Image (cartoon, rainbow, N blue to C red; front, side):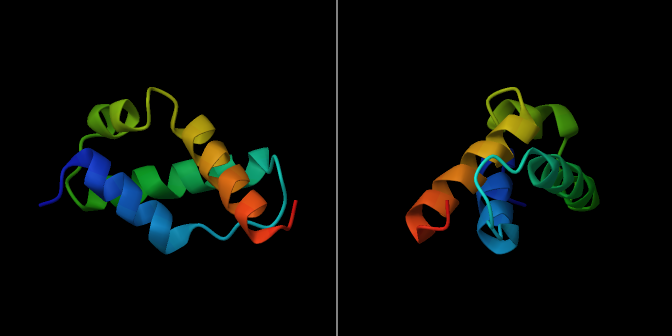
Length: 74
């Protein structure tokens, strides 16, 4: 079974679909979905949040913003 950080990074690679800069609602949704999938995979919620530097929605927002910038869609 992957560790929390590995799970989180793989999940982001598989599920991130950036469209606009600062999509806070999208980041919240992704955080909820990630938590749900982590629980199904046996990943502890506390460990997952620690892997996201203590704030899963903020982590998702940062990843979304980086991806938007890379795509030039922001």
